[in-house]
Length: 446
Image (cartoon, rainbow, N blue to C red; front, top):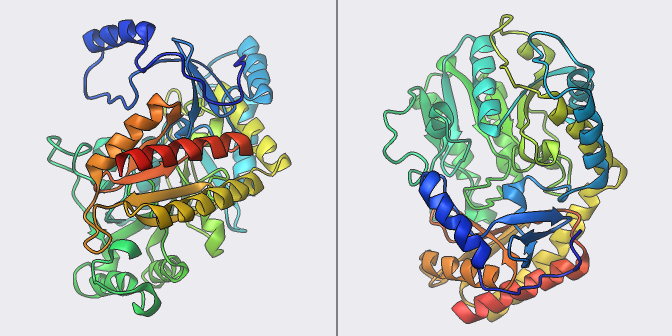
């Protein structure tokens, strides 16, 4: 039990116990496994974490968007304990278990669209994307995939080929998978056509249509994969018309539309899924992160006829849809619906956006404020006219913040975006205290 409602620091980070563990980490863990904050968690509760030295920090990162339901939610802990007493594993490929089936039923009910759907489960977001591509290719009998500039879909060979950012995700790991084509995303703050949103005519969607007429043959393209709101790319929120146009272009050209809702899903944006904002029915949806409250679980959900395309044994895996994780996910969905987590996210977003807009008036370092629901961010620039990314200042702000008890993450193609992924159970008092720390850090590093 964490005996505090707010951040409380008793040492600098890293403290003495963390320093010992850091030496062990350096000895036994490769540097390729990155580390943002040089300390170690001892326990977590709600939106707070306590490190091994007794420092209490407010977590605005949420395990990279995994802890939407918060740390140590009592109802989730209870179902995990109950399931653990029965069995930890029984591969779905050998002998079935009911939690996998009941969770698939839940996914059919909550994934956008009225079509009858089926779901397969895997272990990570990258695995869900890999399987979505496999299923799309099997169903369409076509090969190529369209992805967007700025996208992040994972770090396996196929998914890093879909991912846009070279360093650190793709650097030194070539050759990549062929048959993947990148097109512009609607990043209005940095429009590559130099246009303003109010009169751009959604040029980036026009570009996609042009590519399919002059560069790519739609008869070769199995699917287009898109984050409804880009995550690692910088919490880039596209205009409503862009998402609708892309979906229509896919329909016109017989291309499956895959919505990557791995970071945007499970109430983060103020709706159960970001796709709900545009009233579209993706052909395939990939989910992970907050699906099972921190246990490794991901999903691919699609229309019945699409999911039935692969032959028996063509999809799945030894640990895919682990029973412990499935039991937790069923309870996650139940709690989120019962306690209106979408509404919680909207309230968090309102507070954060108001505070960020006030900060933008004071600090020229803030170039843009954007987001939906509790998926909000600020983009930092050295100059608002040139929009030169303020990467160094961003890093300083993150370091200053965690020394004051606030965990933050950066994002963006230039590493100059500060994103908010706070657990949706955060109290208003905690949220404002975190925003106070962030503002103080910006003021110091301006």
